[in-house]
Length: 79
Image 1 (cartoon, rainbow, N blue to C red):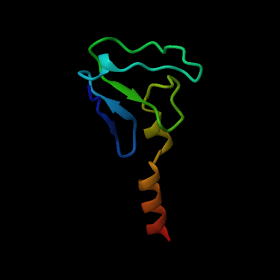
Image 2: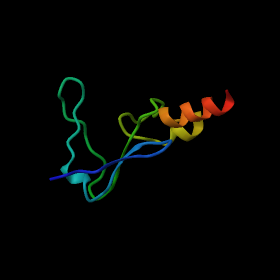
Image 3: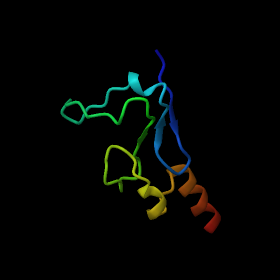
Image 4: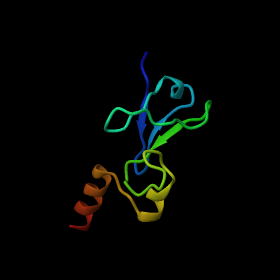
């Protein structure tokens, strides 16, 4: 089974509600991480600022997070 993880341009890693039941998250020691409510999509933090890690809480928008490729393009424009 293929699970699609969508890398949002300046936000989280997104897994649809349809794919979510097939996802298993574990911590660095292999311990299971409790998943959000069944039937809900999963958004994983990639900015590091979420208070609900590994899940996204929207903090990326408050801190001005830019993904690597976006940040690089902005820096190149600012020269």
